Image (cartoon, rainbow, N blue to C red; front, side, top):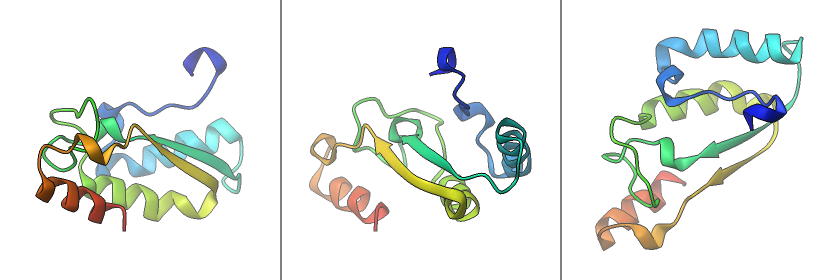
Amino acid sequence: MKDHGCLIFESDDCHRDNLDQIEQKINHYYQSKDSRYWVSFDIDGVDAGEFQSTGTAEDQGLSLDFIQSFFSRFAGNSVGMDFTEVNFELAPSAQTRLNDECTFR
C-alpha cells in the first residue's frame, strides 16, 4: 500500500490524543478538509484483550475507545469502508465470539 502512495496510519500513531494530527495528515494528503475518502480498517490492529475474532490479534494494539473516536470523527467524510481480517470463527470461546459480534453492532 505504501508503494502506491496510500495514506496509512500505523498502530503506534493511533491514539485518541493524536486525532488532531491524524486529521491534519488526512487534510494535507488530500489537500482539502472537505475531501471524501475510503477507509480500510485491518481489525488485526485491535488489542487482543478487546477483540479476538481475527487470526493475528495484536498485543497492545488499538483500543476500542480509539476506534470509536476515530470513526465518530472521520466516518462522515468517508464514501465507504471495509473491515479486513474479521473472522468470528477464530474466537477462542462462544462468549468471546458473542462479545466480538456485539462490537460490530
